[in-house]
Image 1 (tube, rainbow, N blue to C red):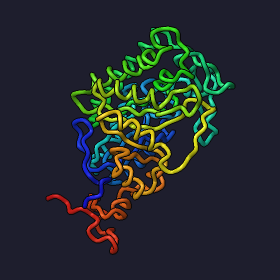
Image 2 (tube, rainbow, N blue to C red):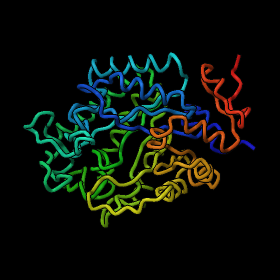
Image 3 (cartoon, rainbow, N blue to C red):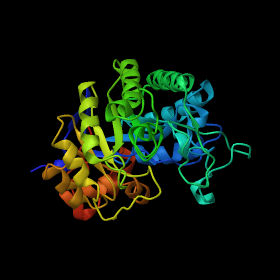
Image 4 (tube, one colour):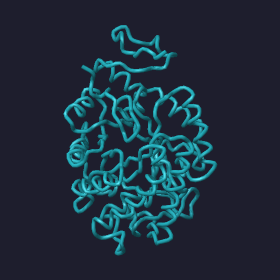
Length: 369
Protein backbone atom coordinates (compact mmCIF):
# COMPACT_ATOMS: atom_id res chain seq x y z
CA UNK A 1 0.00 0.00 0.00
CA UNK A 2 1.30 3.45 -0.94
CA UNK A 3 1.90 5.71 2.04
CA UNK A 4 -0.80 8.37 2.20
CA UNK A 5 1.88 11.04 2.54
CA UNK A 6 3.14 10.14 -0.93
CA UNK A 7 -0.18 10.12 -2.72
CA UNK A 8 -0.79 12.83 -5.31
CA UNK A 9 -3.05 15.73 -4.33
CA UNK A 10 -4.76 18.36 -6.47
CA UNK A 11 -4.60 21.96 -5.26
CA UNK A 12 -6.94 23.75 -7.58
CA UNK A 13 -5.70 22.90 -11.05
CA UNK A 14 -2.21 22.09 -9.77
CA UNK A 15 -1.41 18.42 -9.17
CA UNK A 16 1.26 17.82 -6.52
CA UNK A 17 3.26 14.56 -6.59
CA UNK A 18 2.94 14.13 -2.80
CA UNK A 19 1.48 15.80 0.27
CA UNK A 20 4.64 17.38 1.65
CA UNK A 21 4.71 21.16 1.42
CA UNK A 22 7.90 23.14 1.97
CA UNK A 23 6.53 26.09 3.92
CA UNK A 24 7.75 29.67 3.38
CA UNK A 25 10.71 30.52 5.59
CA UNK A 26 12.08 34.07 5.83
CA UNK A 27 15.85 34.19 5.35
CA UNK A 28 16.46 37.87 6.14
CA UNK A 29 19.12 37.91 3.46
CA UNK A 30 17.73 40.22 0.77
CA UNK A 31 19.11 43.62 -0.21
CA UNK A 32 16.53 46.33 -0.88
CA UNK A 33 13.91 43.62 -1.31
CA UNK A 34 16.03 41.76 -3.84
CA UNK A 35 16.95 38.09 -3.56
CA UNK A 36 20.66 37.31 -3.33
CA UNK A 37 22.90 34.30 -3.92
CA UNK A 38 21.86 33.05 -0.48
CA UNK A 39 18.33 32.54 -1.82
CA UNK A 40 19.71 30.71 -4.82
CA UNK A 41 21.51 28.27 -2.52
CA UNK A 42 18.61 28.01 -0.06
CA UNK A 43 15.87 27.44 -2.62
CA UNK A 44 18.16 25.36 -4.81
CA UNK A 45 18.68 22.71 -2.15
CA UNK A 46 14.99 22.64 -1.24
CA UNK A 47 14.01 22.36 -4.90
CA UNK A 48 15.61 18.90 -5.00
CA UNK A 49 14.12 17.84 -1.66
CA UNK A 50 11.45 15.68 -3.27
CA UNK A 51 8.61 17.68 -1.68
CA UNK A 52 5.33 18.20 -3.50
CA UNK A 53 5.71 21.98 -3.66
CA UNK A 54 8.26 24.60 -2.64
CA UNK A 55 6.95 27.89 -1.24
CA UNK A 56 9.08 31.02 -1.53
CA UNK A 57 9.32 32.98 1.70
CA UNK A 58 6.99 35.87 2.52
CA UNK A 59 7.45 38.41 -0.26
CA UNK A 60 6.35 41.87 0.79
CA UNK A 61 4.06 43.71 -1.60
CA UNK A 62 5.41 47.09 -0.46
CA UNK A 63 8.78 48.14 1.01
CA UNK A 64 7.06 49.12 4.29
CA UNK A 65 5.37 45.72 4.32
CA UNK A 66 8.64 43.92 4.97
CA UNK A 67 9.20 42.45 8.42
CA UNK A 68 12.86 43.51 8.34
CA UNK A 69 14.91 45.66 6.00
CA UNK A 70 16.50 42.40 4.78
CA UNK A 71 13.25 40.76 3.67
CA UNK A 72 12.38 39.73 0.13
CA UNK A 73 9.94 41.90 -1.79
CA UNK A 74 8.01 41.66 -5.01
CA UNK A 75 7.11 45.30 -5.46
CA UNK A 76 9.31 46.75 -8.21
CA UNK A 77 11.25 45.78 -11.31
CA UNK A 78 14.48 45.22 -9.39
CA UNK A 79 12.95 42.77 -6.89
CA UNK A 80 11.16 40.97 -9.71
CA UNK A 81 14.38 40.67 -11.74
CA UNK A 82 16.32 39.33 -8.77
CA UNK A 83 13.64 36.70 -8.14
CA UNK A 84 13.59 35.81 -11.84
CA UNK A 85 17.34 35.09 -11.72
CA UNK A 86 16.94 32.72 -8.76
CA UNK A 87 13.93 30.98 -10.27
CA UNK A 88 15.72 30.47 -13.58
CA UNK A 89 18.58 28.70 -11.80
CA UNK A 90 16.22 26.54 -9.74
CA UNK A 91 14.12 25.55 -12.74
CA UNK A 92 17.16 24.57 -14.74
CA UNK A 93 17.60 21.60 -12.42
CA UNK A 94 14.18 20.94 -10.84
CA UNK A 95 10.58 20.64 -11.98
CA UNK A 96 9.14 21.10 -8.48
CA UNK A 97 6.04 23.34 -8.43
CA UNK A 98 6.96 26.71 -6.94
CA UNK A 99 4.52 28.81 -4.90
CA UNK A 100 5.06 32.21 -3.33
CA UNK A 101 3.66 33.73 -0.17
CA UNK A 102 2.56 37.35 -0.64
CA UNK A 103 2.49 39.37 2.55
CA UNK A 104 2.40 42.69 4.36
CA UNK A 105 3.74 42.79 7.91
CA UNK A 106 1.64 45.75 9.10
CA UNK A 107 2.55 46.78 12.65
CA UNK A 108 5.13 43.96 12.94
CA UNK A 109 7.30 45.55 10.25
CA UNK A 110 10.48 47.66 10.55
CA UNK A 111 12.39 45.26 12.81
CA UNK A 112 15.96 44.10 13.11
CA UNK A 113 16.98 40.67 11.86
CA UNK A 114 16.21 37.89 14.37
CA UNK A 115 19.87 37.22 15.04
CA UNK A 116 20.28 40.94 15.83
CA UNK A 117 17.53 40.79 18.43
CA UNK A 118 14.48 41.35 16.25
CA UNK A 119 13.38 44.53 18.01
CA UNK A 120 11.45 47.21 16.18
CA UNK A 121 13.60 49.88 14.52
CA UNK A 122 12.31 53.43 15.02
CA UNK A 123 11.02 55.27 11.95
CA UNK A 124 13.80 57.88 12.10
CA UNK A 125 16.61 55.32 12.59
CA UNK A 126 18.68 53.63 9.91
CA UNK A 127 16.75 50.76 8.31
CA UNK A 128 13.51 51.81 10.02
CA UNK A 129 10.21 53.22 8.77
CA UNK A 130 6.72 54.12 9.93
CA UNK A 131 4.53 51.06 10.19
CA UNK A 132 0.83 50.87 9.36
CA UNK A 133 -2.03 48.79 10.76
CA UNK A 134 -5.81 48.66 11.03
CA UNK A 135 -5.58 50.66 14.26
CA UNK A 136 -2.87 52.71 15.95
CA UNK A 137 -2.05 49.91 18.43
CA UNK A 138 1.59 48.76 18.68
CA UNK A 139 2.50 45.08 18.94
CA UNK A 140 4.61 45.77 22.04
CA UNK A 141 3.97 48.66 24.39
CA UNK A 142 7.49 49.96 23.79
CA UNK A 143 7.09 49.96 19.99
CA UNK A 144 6.40 53.04 17.93
CA UNK A 145 2.66 53.02 17.26
CA UNK A 146 1.59 52.19 13.71
CA UNK A 147 -0.39 54.67 11.66
CA UNK A 148 -4.02 53.62 11.30
CA UNK A 149 -4.76 53.00 7.63
CA UNK A 150 -7.09 55.51 6.02
CA UNK A 151 -8.97 54.99 2.74
CA UNK A 152 -5.94 56.00 0.72
CA UNK A 153 -3.72 53.60 2.64
CA UNK A 154 -6.12 50.72 2.11
CA UNK A 155 -6.23 51.45 -1.61
CA UNK A 156 -2.43 51.57 -1.81
CA UNK A 157 -2.28 48.09 -0.28
CA UNK A 158 -4.99 46.74 -2.60
CA UNK A 159 -3.03 48.04 -5.59
CA UNK A 160 0.21 46.59 -4.22
CA UNK A 161 -1.25 43.08 -3.88
CA UNK A 162 -2.61 43.35 -7.43
CA UNK A 163 0.79 44.47 -8.74
CA UNK A 164 2.69 41.73 -6.88
CA UNK A 165 0.26 39.14 -8.26
CA UNK A 166 0.89 40.37 -11.80
CA UNK A 167 4.62 40.07 -11.20
CA UNK A 168 4.22 36.55 -9.79
CA UNK A 169 2.28 35.52 -12.88
CA UNK A 170 4.96 37.02 -15.10
CA UNK A 171 7.58 34.99 -13.23
CA UNK A 172 5.68 31.78 -13.94
CA UNK A 173 4.91 31.10 -10.27
CA UNK A 174 2.67 28.02 -9.97
CA UNK A 175 0.58 29.08 -6.95
CA UNK A 176 0.14 32.00 -4.55
CA UNK A 177 -0.38 31.81 -0.81
CA UNK A 178 -1.79 34.87 0.96
CA UNK A 179 -0.35 35.43 4.42
CA UNK A 180 -3.24 36.07 6.82
CA UNK A 181 -1.52 34.57 9.87
CA UNK A 182 1.15 35.16 12.52
CA UNK A 183 0.04 38.67 13.45
CA UNK A 184 0.80 40.30 10.12
CA UNK A 185 -1.45 42.82 8.40
CA UNK A 186 -4.34 40.66 7.19
CA UNK A 187 -4.41 38.84 10.54
CA UNK A 188 -4.37 42.25 12.25
CA UNK A 189 -7.62 43.07 10.48
CA UNK A 190 -9.16 39.76 11.53
CA UNK A 191 -8.40 39.89 15.24
CA UNK A 192 -10.41 42.12 17.60
CA UNK A 193 -7.25 42.55 19.67
CA UNK A 194 -5.55 44.55 16.91
CA UNK A 195 -8.54 45.87 14.97
CA UNK A 196 -10.43 48.58 16.87
CA UNK A 197 -11.81 50.38 13.82
CA UNK A 198 -15.29 51.85 13.85
CA UNK A 199 -15.83 51.85 10.08
CA UNK A 200 -16.82 49.07 7.65
CA UNK A 201 -13.51 47.28 8.36
CA UNK A 202 -13.86 46.89 12.11
CA UNK A 203 -16.20 45.72 14.83
CA UNK A 204 -18.25 42.73 13.70
CA UNK A 205 -16.67 39.56 12.34
CA UNK A 206 -18.13 40.37 8.94
CA UNK A 207 -16.41 43.76 8.97
CA UNK A 208 -13.09 42.41 10.27
CA UNK A 209 -13.03 39.83 7.47
CA UNK A 210 -13.88 42.42 4.81
CA UNK A 211 -10.40 43.68 3.93
CA UNK A 212 -8.67 40.24 3.93
CA UNK A 213 -11.46 38.94 1.68
CA UNK A 214 -11.09 41.95 -0.61
CA UNK A 215 -7.38 41.20 -0.93
CA UNK A 216 -8.12 37.55 -1.65
CA UNK A 217 -10.57 38.49 -4.40
CA UNK A 218 -8.05 40.89 -5.96
CA UNK A 219 -5.29 38.28 -5.99
CA UNK A 220 -7.46 35.43 -7.20
CA UNK A 221 -9.00 37.51 -10.00
CA UNK A 222 -5.53 38.51 -11.17
CA UNK A 223 -4.05 35.02 -10.89
CA UNK A 224 -6.96 32.72 -11.83
CA UNK A 225 -5.61 32.06 -15.32
CA UNK A 226 -2.19 31.12 -13.95
CA UNK A 227 -2.74 28.89 -10.91
CA UNK A 228 -4.42 28.39 -7.53
CA UNK A 229 -4.53 30.87 -4.67
CA UNK A 230 -4.36 29.54 -1.12
CA UNK A 231 -4.34 31.24 2.30
CA UNK A 232 -2.39 30.74 5.51
CA UNK A 233 -4.36 31.55 8.65
CA UNK A 234 -3.76 31.53 12.38
CA UNK A 235 -6.45 29.27 13.80
CA UNK A 236 -6.35 31.10 17.15
CA UNK A 237 -4.53 33.96 18.82
CA UNK A 238 -4.10 31.85 21.99
CA UNK A 239 -5.32 34.91 23.90
CA UNK A 240 -8.67 35.35 25.67
CA UNK A 241 -10.93 37.58 23.57
CA UNK A 242 -8.78 37.20 20.47
CA UNK A 243 -9.26 35.55 17.09
CA UNK A 244 -10.72 32.08 17.62
CA UNK A 245 -10.99 28.75 15.84
CA UNK A 246 -14.73 29.31 15.48
CA UNK A 247 -14.06 32.54 13.59
CA UNK A 248 -11.39 30.78 11.56
CA UNK A 249 -13.97 28.26 10.37
CA UNK A 250 -16.30 31.05 9.22
CA UNK A 251 -13.40 32.80 7.46
CA UNK A 252 -12.34 29.54 5.80
CA UNK A 253 -15.86 28.94 4.52
CA UNK A 254 -15.99 32.47 3.12
CA UNK A 255 -12.65 31.92 1.39
CA UNK A 256 -13.80 28.61 -0.07
CA UNK A 257 -16.93 30.25 -1.45
CA UNK A 258 -14.67 32.73 -3.26
CA UNK A 259 -12.53 30.03 -4.86
CA UNK A 260 -9.73 29.49 -2.36
CA UNK A 261 -7.86 26.36 -3.44
CA UNK A 262 -6.49 25.31 -0.02
CA UNK A 263 -5.99 26.64 3.49
CA UNK A 264 -2.91 26.28 5.67
CA UNK A 265 -3.78 26.36 9.38
CA UNK A 266 -1.13 27.75 11.71
CA UNK A 267 -1.70 29.82 14.87
CA UNK A 268 -0.55 32.67 17.07
CA UNK A 269 1.75 35.60 16.42
CA UNK A 270 -0.79 38.37 16.94
CA UNK A 271 -0.30 39.28 20.60
CA UNK A 272 2.66 39.03 23.03
CA UNK A 273 0.37 37.62 25.74
CA UNK A 274 -0.26 34.41 23.78
CA UNK A 275 -0.02 31.20 25.80
CA UNK A 276 0.97 28.22 23.65
CA UNK A 277 1.72 24.73 24.94
CA UNK A 278 4.21 23.56 22.31
CA UNK A 279 4.34 19.88 21.42
CA UNK A 280 4.66 17.86 18.19
CA UNK A 281 1.64 18.51 15.99
CA UNK A 282 0.15 20.97 18.49
CA UNK A 283 -1.73 22.80 15.72
CA UNK A 284 -3.16 19.69 14.06
CA UNK A 285 -6.45 19.86 16.03
CA UNK A 286 -6.99 23.34 14.59
CA UNK A 287 -6.50 21.97 11.08
CA UNK A 288 -8.93 19.14 11.82
CA UNK A 289 -11.60 21.58 12.97
CA UNK A 290 -11.30 23.54 9.75
CA UNK A 291 -11.18 20.38 7.64
CA UNK A 292 -14.47 19.22 9.13
CA UNK A 293 -16.09 22.46 7.92
CA UNK A 294 -14.76 22.81 4.35
CA UNK A 295 -14.16 20.67 1.27
CA UNK A 296 -10.99 22.37 0.00
CA UNK A 297 -7.67 20.78 1.01
CA UNK A 298 -6.43 21.68 4.49
CA UNK A 299 -2.71 21.79 5.27
CA UNK A 300 -1.41 21.21 8.80
CA UNK A 301 1.80 22.82 10.03
CA UNK A 302 3.76 23.20 13.26
CA UNK A 303 6.42 20.97 14.84
CA UNK A 304 5.73 18.18 12.36
CA UNK A 305 9.12 16.52 12.22
CA UNK A 306 8.52 12.76 12.32
CA UNK A 307 7.45 11.00 9.09
CA UNK A 308 5.30 8.49 10.98
CA UNK A 309 3.44 11.34 12.68
CA UNK A 310 3.03 13.10 9.33
CA UNK A 311 1.62 9.92 7.80
CA UNK A 312 -0.82 9.55 10.69
CA UNK A 313 -2.08 13.13 10.20
CA UNK A 314 -3.04 12.27 6.62
CA UNK A 315 -4.25 8.73 7.34
CA UNK A 316 -6.45 9.88 10.24
CA UNK A 317 -8.07 12.55 8.10
CA UNK A 318 -6.80 15.41 10.26
CA UNK A 319 -5.44 17.22 7.20
CA UNK A 320 -4.86 16.64 3.50
CA UNK A 321 -1.19 17.64 3.49
CA UNK A 322 1.54 18.69 5.91
CA UNK A 323 3.85 21.67 5.72
CA UNK A 324 7.37 21.53 7.09
CA UNK A 325 9.63 24.50 7.71
CA UNK A 326 12.35 24.22 10.36
CA UNK A 327 12.45 20.47 9.80
CA UNK A 328 13.40 21.19 6.19
CA UNK A 329 16.10 23.64 7.25
CA UNK A 330 17.57 21.00 9.54
CA UNK A 331 17.17 18.23 6.97
CA UNK A 332 16.72 19.42 3.36
CA UNK A 333 16.26 15.75 2.34
CA UNK A 334 13.38 15.22 4.80
CA UNK A 335 11.04 13.91 2.07
CA UNK A 336 13.70 11.36 0.98
CA UNK A 337 14.06 10.12 4.53
CA UNK A 338 10.28 10.09 5.01
CA UNK A 339 9.92 7.94 1.90
CA UNK A 340 12.53 5.52 3.25
CA UNK A 341 10.76 5.33 6.62
CA UNK A 342 7.33 4.77 5.06
CA UNK A 343 8.41 2.37 2.30
CA UNK A 344 7.58 4.79 -0.50
CA UNK A 345 9.55 5.78 -3.59
CA UNK A 346 10.71 9.26 -4.47
CA UNK A 347 12.21 10.96 -7.52
CA UNK A 348 15.75 12.28 -7.13
CA UNK A 349 18.10 14.10 -9.51
CA UNK A 350 20.12 11.70 -11.68
CA UNK A 351 23.29 13.21 -10.24
CA UNK A 352 22.32 11.72 -6.87
CA UNK A 353 20.96 8.34 -7.94
CA UNK A 354 24.08 6.48 -6.86
CA UNK A 355 23.49 7.64 -3.29
CA UNK A 356 20.59 5.22 -2.79
CA UNK A 357 21.25 3.41 0.52
CA UNK A 358 21.79 -0.34 0.34
CA UNK A 359 19.16 -0.88 3.02
CA UNK A 360 16.59 1.03 0.94
CA UNK A 361 16.97 -0.45 -2.53
CA UNK A 362 14.06 0.73 -4.69
CA UNK A 363 13.68 4.00 -2.75
CA UNK A 364 14.53 6.13 -5.77
CA UNK A 365 11.81 6.10 -8.42
CA UNK A 366 12.94 5.10 -11.92
CA UNK A 367 13.39 8.05 -14.20
CA UNK A 368 10.95 8.49 -17.02
CA UNK A 369 12.49 8.09 -20.48
